Length: 122
Image (cartoon, rainbow, N blue to C red; front, side, top):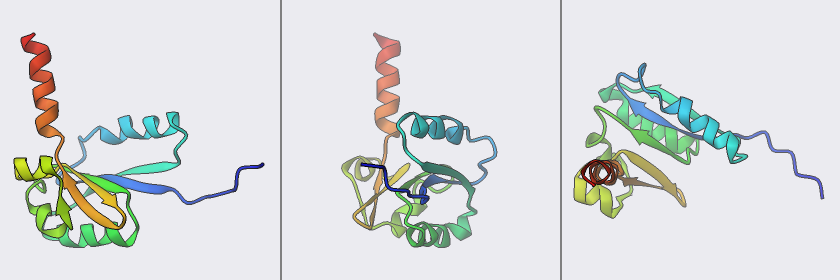
């Protein structure tokens, strides 16, 4: 059976200010291609006063999720539908995941830091 044509790309991205030196897109998009995903990672410069509109826009466009970087890691919390355990413990969000239309904040910073620390100490 032939694969059905679908020209709709899934969207994810990064919200931060400034973002010009954020290299995440250069890492993520090749990973998407390697997995056969037609997804786009957008690096979006979002001023603090525009964060509510940016989150609303991500909802409107059906983003699969987005990363938050400085200065939005704490401020984004009030615009989300809930927090995972990691974000609750850290009091900050660096990843937002769309789970059945609900934006849930997560935090991978702590785990990443501890994993790096263990590799240096061992």
